[in-house]
Length: 191
Image (cartoon, rainbow, N blue to C red):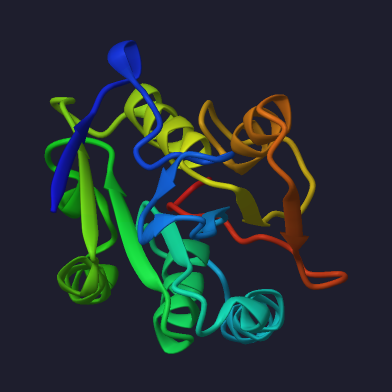
């Protein structure tokens, strides 16, 4: 199923907080946000913690919603699928796949194919506004959020800190995953 979403006319994609969720009424929808550029040990830690948080939902028909970005989104999406959850993908804009690092595009395509639902925003290019709009759609469709976040301010508009702030404003419970002492690496040269 492909749905369109746009911030100006945006409504919850599924019905967090009591509405109709991905698998029907009563299904828990878990939103995923987090940093890109996770190193090997960080990615393994995030996967283990996501599995710990999501394991109680296995077998319930739960859904996970993510923007499929490289890093946290992909790591947790794989955990969702491994636990039998339904994957919902939010595509912020046209050209979003090409916006991903070349090394990530194979995983992006794989997860997109495995998505039970795809929400495509009607935006011409991936930019901070379209990324934040997608994150708002994600939060609004979720009952709870997993944030792979180092607790620091966002490096640019629409970063993980902004998404966590929005989720808290919307009264969504937020579970934060971050390995103690880990440092986030730059996600692009010179950053």
